Amino acid sequence: MGEEKKAVIKKIQATGQMKKIMADYFYDLDNAAKDDSQKVAWCTSVGPAELLLSMGFKVYYPENHGAMLGATRMASNLIPAANAIGYSPDICSYLTSDIGSYLKKQTPLSMAYKGIEGVPKPDVLVFNTNQCRDVQDWLSWYSREFNAPIIGISTFCNIGDVTDGVLSGIVHQIKELIPILEKVSGNKFDIDKFREVMARSKRCSELWKKVLETNTASPAPMSFFDATIHMGPAVVLRGSDTANDYYELLLKELEERVANKTGAVEDEKFRLYWEGMPIWGKLRNLSEFFISLNTAVIASTYCNSWIFNAFDPDDPFLSMARAYTEIFIVRDENYKEKYIEDIVDRFKLDGIVFHDSKTCPNNSNNRYGMPERLAKKLSVPTLTINGDLNDLRCYSEEQAKTNIEAFIEQLDSK
Image (tube, rainbow, N blue to C red; front, top):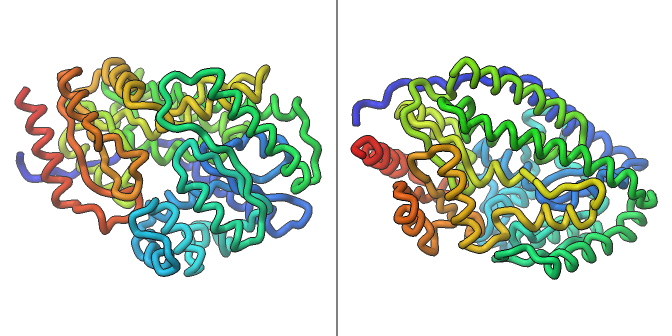
């Protein structure tokens, strides 16, 4: 492998609009937190946001803040503050960096948005354990800190088929949230408003799916690293026309790239899948490194996790339960392998990169033999990179790059 050549990340023109709507979102939240007439709900990223929005809450997502702490490389310096009050360095580094951020009164929100001094104070905290138990522990800490009620949904894990029996329990738990949310918000639940928000979220999901699937084209118009940034509106603004308008804009630009055969990677030679969490503090470095190897990382489990095919405004409770239970992280190994197999085939991928994220076992699917089984079944090489979503002390850039180079050489020799 020769000397690393200079890599250029091609700018997506819609980025400017995305930055504007994300700024508007955070200023709106900040204003709501300072206005007693408005209520703020904290919600886990795949929690029942549509229900909260329909009842008039402004919704804040702590995991989004955790990702910002990682991307700005603030996390590693903040995690020890949470460790010092008893939160292990081995648990979710979103959790520890976020609590550390609060304890040390340091947030990327203040750096990015003038006038915002901190995260918005919650009136209620709402979780769904479909991603992990850590989210409940995370919000529980803030519940004690702010003396605000915490409520939520406990989801089954390691599910094969999503059965009616599984869903009926989730539906029941969602409906049990309503009386508490009515009391906190002062607003009565309105099924028609709930349906309206669900319809907008459904549209957001459809558009985000189309955005990601432009990468079935060759060359692929957008990298995984681009997508982790542009998924922001799908996470925090789903249920709004703002998000839908943004994805119409982004989709148009990507479709033009496809038509003009403009790839995210110049002279695209290899196409890879990224399994697991991003390494937030190294997005740019990894993006440039893969570009330098003429390799496009173009599909992922992570970005697909905000595609909710089941949303149905005509049946909002059951479809919400199904949508938030069908996600990849909830499912068993057989489902996950079939899921990846389908994407490898449709996106015409040459290999799979597994990220073993030290503090995120639920999003590290390399630990029980999956890479070896998929490599054998699909005749596609796999590579495991050791790292972490936020704690860069768990990541060796030199080792990762050496392993990636050797992996690309392996692809080149096939």
